[in-house]
Length: 131
Image (cartoon, rainbow, N blue to C red):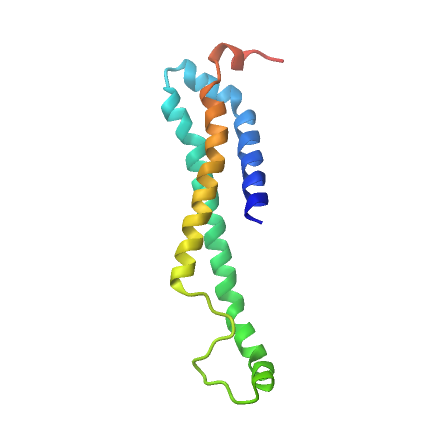
């Protein structure tokens, strides 16, 4: 799953860089350095990864309470005794959440670097030509 996510994100960010080729060429022509242009797709990748993480955590929080409530009787039947109120069937510890955040943003950053290297190679004159 992580490999597919990384490949999809890399392709998406690479395509975004290709769509912005003319704009990036104009920025290079105006004097923007390659290092600053390198940051655009990297920041975009970080934001996509962070926002995806936040949406997934929000959805988890939204659905974990109903899952814990609905499946408690089935869990009690399966175990054969009453489950205490503090026991949660669907739970995500904070440590796992932080590891997932770092992993998601890390994969997004690495994926964005592929697009960023392509953007730094843009020649202003070539980008401005109409095809």
